[in-house]
Amino acid sequence: MKFKSIFLILILSININAKEIQKLVWPSAPDPARIEFKALITSPEDLEIKKGIFSRAWEFFAGSSEEERFVKPFGLHVDENQRLYVSDTGTRIVSVLDTKKNKKFIIEGTKKHRFISPMDIDTDKEGNIYISDSVLGFVYVYNKKGKYLRKIGEGKKLHRPVGIAIDSKLKIIYVADTLASKIQVYSLFGKYIKTIGKEGAEDGSFNKPTYIALDDDSNLYICDSMNHRVQILDKDGKFISKFGKIGDTLSSLANPRGITIDSNGNIFVTDTTFHVVKIFNKKGQLLLVLGHYGEKRGEFAIPEDIAISSEGVIYIADSYNMRVQVLKLLKNVKSGG
Image 1 (spheres, rainbow, N blue to C red):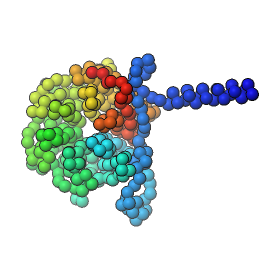
Image 2: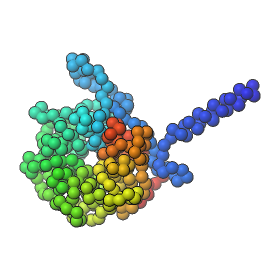
Image 3: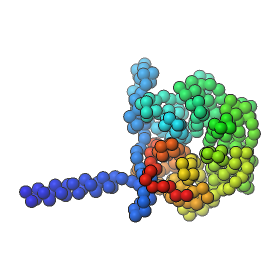
Image 4: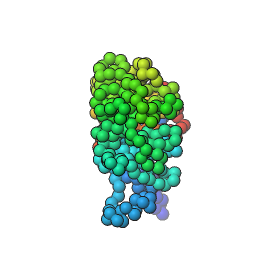
C-alpha cells in the first residue's frame, strides 16, 4: 500500500510538472507573465470551424476532400466582430474565419482575375473587406459576405501594393506601395487623394515600406523595412518620430515587416530576419522580445504580419512554418509603456 501511495504521488507530481512545462509565457519567471501562448492554427479546422454547405458541395463535384491547410500565411486582420482574415500567398486565397458563428468562406479574387499574391487585409465600418494584391497592383473591395464590389488603384497606378490601413473616421485608405517606396492615399471608393513620402533615407522618406498600423489619433506607424526602422507620421503625413536601426542588438530592426498596436499603445513589430516579434512602447523603447528561430510553439520562421483583436488575442503569420500562432495578452498584468 505504501508503494502504491508513493507511486500515485509520483504520477500526480509528473502530471502537474507536465502542465507547468506545457504553459508558455513571456517574459519567463521570475518576471510577471504578460503574454501567454494559446494555439497553433495550420488550417480552419484547428479553430473547429466547419465548412459551409457550398464548400462541401463543391468538393463533392470536384472530387476533393483534402483538408485546407495554410501554405504561406502572410497578411492578417481581425475585425470588431472577432472574425480572423488570413491571406495565403501559397494558395493565393484569403480565408475569412468566424469562430463565433462557426463559419468560414474564402475569397479568391474576381471573375476576371484570380489573386496572384494577396498580401494584406482590412475592413471598414460597414464590414467591407479590402485586400491588396502586390502582383495585380490593386486593392480589391468586397462586401462582408465576400461579394466583389470594386478595386482601388486605377486612378493612380500602384506598383506593388502591400500593407493597407483604413481610417474609418477620415474615410480613407493608406496603401504602402512597396516598389515605389511611397504611401498612396485613396478614398474608400478609390479616388486618389495624395502621395506621402518619396524614396530615400531621410525622415518622412521610405525604402520599401511594407505594413501600416493606425492609432486612435489617426497617426500612421509604417514599417520602413529596408531603412530598418518604424516611422510614425501624423494623419497629414508629417513626420513625428522613428525608432529602430540596423544592427545585431535586441532593439535593432533588420527587416521590420508586420506591425500592430495594442490597447495600451504598445507597438508590436515582426522582424523576419531575426524571426521574432519585438514589442516597443510609445517612445520606441524595447519592452519584450517574443520567440526565436525554430519550429516549436512560440518559435518562428519568417513571421510576416501580426494582428491583435479588441479582446487581446494576438495572431502572428508564422509564414515559413505554414501556420498562424495565437497568443494572449494577460489581463491581470498591465503592459509596459
